[in-house]
Image (cartoon, rainbow, N blue to C red; front, side, top):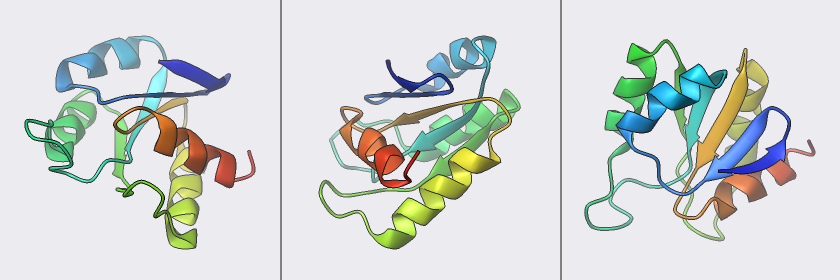
Length: 107
């Protein structure tokens, strides 16, 4: 995980079993910026979402193809980060898209 701000980190793909550790570290929200099936064998967002919801966390799917974020994507990302009641972890394939969206929100 890469810390971008005190309450915001990014990483590459996470797995459902990572959710418990995130919750224990004070995260309340997970944001996925990967389209499902971007890579063979990639864990689908629905599995991450189910684990997050079971842990009492919020989960958002704002899939972005590399280099193709729209203004609407930035607004959706901003709303997800703003709605968080604790730390936020966003992920994609490498963390780059998640970091770019965070920067685009002007935070």
